Image: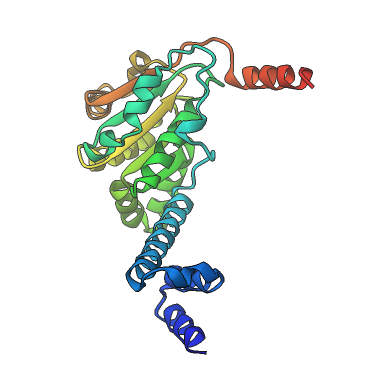
Length: 253
């Protein structure tokens, strides 16, 4: 009876991990042979793990990543200009802590979005937040925010997130409001947060896509000078390769 009351109190105090850990201990008779300090340490560990998992879940939900990707799942079987040692280094997340950017360019289907989401997911696992958006949606959301008076709140959110993924940059030329909004977003994050940009266009063509020379210079200065650059060069789509690998695997059975 006393144990049930203690578990109820732990739940009431929102110590769910400890409560679940205590229930697990009660279900294992061999736990009686452990010292109090050992059993208590196990409860503390259970609570810590519960809190870490809860925080990770919250960060991933807030990130709204397009793909459920991880660095461990990245395919290195086909050469596409992707250096595994570089990816392992980025996996330390020091680039986030040092507010460095990442630029991922390459043809469609080469895995740019997958790599971006994997890097952001690793950041979330390290306790750092992220947020994913397509560039076209970013421009639309900022235009709506200006119209309904919520621009300040939206801009603050974008400025504070540790890792911002801007996917599919340069699919179309930027209008004047779009390039000004993008400059404001990037400027707010300059040297205070990290941005991952994916694009089918090589960086040397971005100036033309942005349009206005003055804004283009300002944007590229803030994005490119401290960025890690990943240029995927494989002409064959990774989507086609995955289909090919799947067919090969099926043929083995």
